[in-house]
Amino acid sequence: MKRLTVLGSTGSIGTQTLDVVRENPEQLQVYALVAGTRVDEIERQVREFKPQIVAMMDEKGARELKARLRDLPVVVEQGMDGIIRTVTAKEPDTVVTAISGRIGLEPTLAALKAGKNIALANKETLVAGGELVMETAKRLGRSIIPVDSEHSAIFQCLEEPNGLLEKILITASGGPFLGWSREQLSEVTPEMALKHPNWSMGAKITIDSATMMNKGLEVIEAHHLFGLTYDKIEVLVHPQSIVHSMVQYQDGSILAQLGRPDMRLPIQYALSYPTRWSSPFERLDLRGKTLTFQEPNLKETPALALAYEVGRRGGTLPAVMNAANEVAVYAFLQQKIGYLQIVEIVEDICAEHEVLDATDLESILEADDWARKRTQERIQNC
Image (tube, rainbow, N blue to C red; front, top):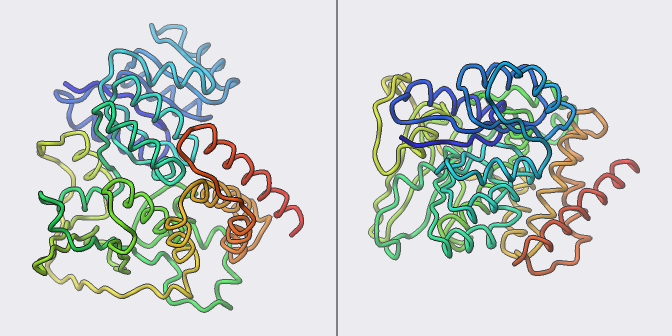
């Protein structure tokens, strides 16, 4: 029986993680839930899964939740300090980091230091602090199992020894605007960008998928997860979202992982690893399917080109890119800037940044804070 802490339980990945728990009651138990602001939803989750601890980032929400749960023997924590206490509790062995954004970095590091294994769905953690996180996991003998569908696919296709690996091929759906001209993109609204053709995801990651920044973040994440140079990480546009990623070996063989666009499959694999559990979820039927692949046009996807450049430069620059992108995406969702301005602003902030080493948490957080403030200033002047 694995005891879980679900970090970001009310978000898209968090709720699908709880779907997996429902289907595997003999293998999985929820010990703790962590959420941001959604009091109604986390109250429902607490009453169903009966965790020992629940934490909310929003302190007002935590106080309201505590009042609502007076009839249950559950500890309610609040704020980042409360979240850290929750993810470091003695009893759980696995923390599912399903929270969106850089905010997942500190709890992930704290969980690793407390001896927990990580089921990682928060790519921003490795983008901002990949060197520090992976070094911490290696030093403490903790495992980080990827939950992102692309990285899960690569993880499932890898064979030992990795020295025989030629490259990995990360697939991208291309989002809702594949093939659109710059003139068409200038008219994109948040409502249009939130309609992903294949996947059901949270707002931020859906916008990132449209701009292809999400794929850029995944390239940097893959670099840290699998220890590969950027020359060995290739992106292919695959609009059908059936092949989730591939691994090519030195003899020319390519291994691919296929499945429906359903995040519950990689979530369950991360929690069942190194075994596979039976699943009630719908199977992929390949009859009548056509699979196509094409090379992304980096001129038409500047976010992906920027991510490669930023990843190769390293240091605090990936944290800056990630922070600037988070702020710019939310500004777009609030209709403060246009769609094309998202990447333009991120590029400008990255160009301004004086890159430092990113070997300690303080340096990463300082760079992140600088980027957020500078991006806000840039948006105000738009």
